[in-house]
Amino acid sequence: MDHKPDQKVVTRFAPSPTGFLHIGGVRTALFAYLYARKHNGTFILRIEDTDKSREVAGSIAHIQESLKWLGISWDFGPDNPGKFNSCLQSDRLDIYKKYAEKLIEKGLAYPDPYTEEETEAFRQDAINSKKPFLYRNHRPTTEGKWDGTKPLRFKVPKIKRYEWYDQVRGTLSAGEEMLDDFILIKTDGYPTYNFAHIVDDLEMGVTHVMRGQEFISSQPKFLSLYDALEIPYPIFATLPPIMGTDGKKKLSKRDGAKDLLEYRDEGYLPETMRNFLALIGWNPGGDRELFSTEELIANFSLEKIQKSGGAFNEEKLRWMNKEYLRLQNSDFLKNYLSDSLPDKLKSLPQYNDDKLNKLITVVFERVHNKSEIKESAEAGEFDFAFVKPEFETNLMKYKNDQSVKDALVRLQMASELLAEADFSSAESIKKSLWGYAEEVGKGELLWPLRTALSGKERSPDPFVIAYVIGREETLSRIKTACDKIAP
Image (cartoon, rainbow, N blue to C red; front, side, top):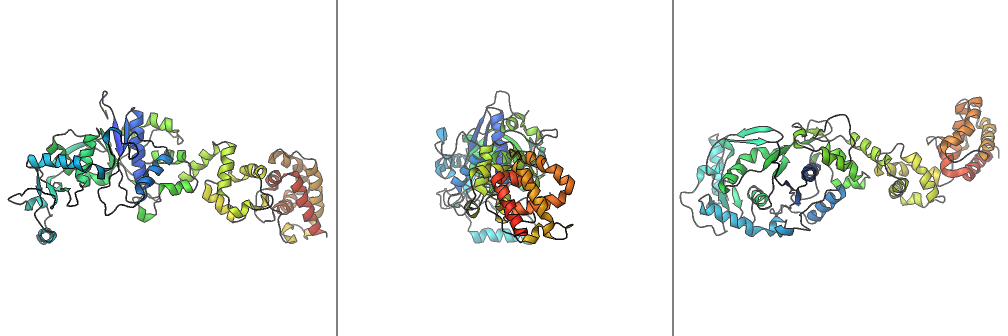
């Protein structure tokens, strides 16, 4: 059981404002959000901004924008702290000081009397002795009063082997070598992560702590502090790492992991990213891969989180985005396409909404996102829709013809057939020409017709082109092509 039946579930996502929101962090936020919503609980966005040297301006707003785009809403956060007064750790210094004083009263915290040089000498002695450096081996024999000019250190009350239960990893344990006297509050007045997150989780009633496996080694320190403060442990769930495409190395910023909003700008839909990230390290069972947010919430459970890492497969992400694009209505796709096209294409003489709507059929059969549309547009693949083509006459010569003049009669016949054709779809246009194409040879007709309409060696088939540009423009381009052949 991952929580008591009468327990109000409270989860949190607590990023540091040190830059863009990494994919691993986003997945942690998503899992915590899904679990809270599954159990009608509370989801908190808390900003851990106590390391001012690493803080990047604008990061807090960026984190909120990223989560909002993904569809992750919080009950309490920087913009609506509610009963917590603030969800920024930098605003909660008095709270940490209160708990620090409790530890001092218990004899479980002391001001660090050593200079950096003295601490480094202790560390070097341990290296020379081939022993691990443990600060607790150098506790001062007398402890002065803490006035904030020195770091305040936690005095580990009991050196023992710790064992704890993790909802994903099962029973875990670590020896006493993982316990040490760590800093609670720095000389700048700000608490360390090791101290602040435990105080905040207690004050905010957090019941479930979800985080990455890099924190496992620090868990004994955390547990010793829980014990010192005489507070019950929350439920722990260690999430598996997100691996690179090859599945061998953890995905990191250094290896090219992108800001979440870069995926937005590339045209990935928020429902795509939610679905995709949810399935990295969580397996609902079965072969199904597309889930609405409501279905993700209904199916989510800690028991189905995998221990091993899951690969960030960009090909799967592209496929999934294409599947979600298929579900969108024509107005959405028209705006999506228009936003993706460069201004120089929009300035072409025949650019209009009717052709844009018809071009949807061509574009969304093969592209997966806005970036691919932009690349295709920059390469001129959609020019045929909005401008009369210019090309060398010999481009219309089919490989089996003696000369380009052999195509003239076929193009003229195609023009006659298309003058009477049903232009309501590419398929109806195809029906009007197909019998003649089989009579004279498919390539013999379709090659010169396609190049006459597009002006390119590679383009969509002529039926699609004719549908997009319409009857009048189709007949006009065929006439121009025929005039090129027989001026």
